Image 1 (cartoon, each protein chain N blue to C red):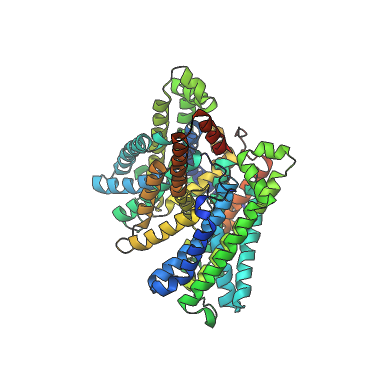
Image 2: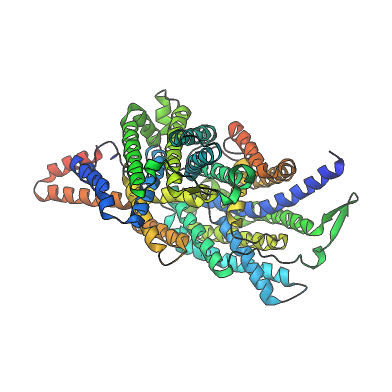
Length: 338
Length: 293
């Protein structure tokens, strides 16, 4: 798949005013939405964090992780177990959940970053299933397939609206942080590894080290998403760690467009709201998701944002061609290469 | 630990390894030639298991029912494989591997729901077929004779695949295509035709192995993911796309599982992964695999 480097140029939809309007709309959402749609919105925000963490590896580093849900689940289990079994403070539990995900990410990543392409995907999938399997079987420690119920946030976050604002703030904060990371020199190295691993290595960059750092960051972000989701949902179950769950960020990234920073977020929002709507009349969500994947692959390669970007660029070049001569056309081409 | 326990675990490991080889060989063959990792291979296996149950029930043949059902299942799954390759995969060879992976993943999701819808969520099983109902005594220790049937089938498949890959014209093409697809194409061999055939053979083996597991009494939803994860361990240890590698990988994983389950059943899978991790550190492309290009 071709990924153009639109990542560091601010794309059209990341215009400052757009973003401000969007953020204001998010803050105003509880005034408009009822409790059901607010819940869906919370889920979309949390899952978007998971999708962003996936896309740090996929869109930026060029490695497809099929086990991202394991870190989501680990963050969630960390919080749930600390809060129900040892009654640790809410904020400390969340920090611990993130830490658990990051540490496991460090261990798993140590093996995974040795591999490229399809092998990386297999290994992340396999490790994800391993984490799932251990949590699922270790009944007297994790509750097995019953999961853990009764995870309550502190009183000031009990109402859905206040928890929504909490999730929104965490989402905005972590997205901003991730954006900074992606644009930092570290982010440039990560992108360099995607474009050409061998050349990047020849520049004296220790590939495995940088991939491992990115892997741990992604694991921590996924863990944070799981950690803030579980107290909202009041419970955690092993199904959070399955590869079905891991497939969701993959699909969201492909749907929204993996080459754009906010592409996975758009994909996840569409998917979550679509999911909420589909569940209204059928329990067979996976088959709908499977069909959707095929539709995207065959009809929307590059994702929605990628598709729009393409169209916009086409129109731009057409406009340039319309009112200028051949030389201007060349210039337009050079511009699009840069 | 006494000899009889070790020996019986060893034998059950062999049986498990044999079953793993049945499934993983199809996966490895498909990957070796098509360079497409078929996530849906486990789903084909699961579909095969459920289908063979229904066919067996429909046939009502006390003696040969299981065998006939297994053969019919393999043929049906070959047809399913043909459809999947022809309708979906064929259009994706020119694309990147993430899209191919996602397409097979979509098949996993669809077939999971299909099975849930058609057969429900219960555990199903077929009684062990006729000459393999009892036990066989080896060095005075009893073993289920059906395990020997599975082992024999595994050995049979090894011989068949070895013959197919190293002794037939198709095998020459397979090995050549695994090395240099463009050169094979330039020599006038229709690559799309080859890919279809390989995928159909892979799907057929998956269906057959699904039918073979039915008498173990484990036909249920989720068996697809369970087997595919172990198969990934097999091919990663042995080397993707290598027949001897798949054989060795199946043997190792079967043994590690059999002895791991004796120490701590919860961690049986973890032991397999530890072996995988060690192999990955020493040889990231697997014992018999080739380094990535």
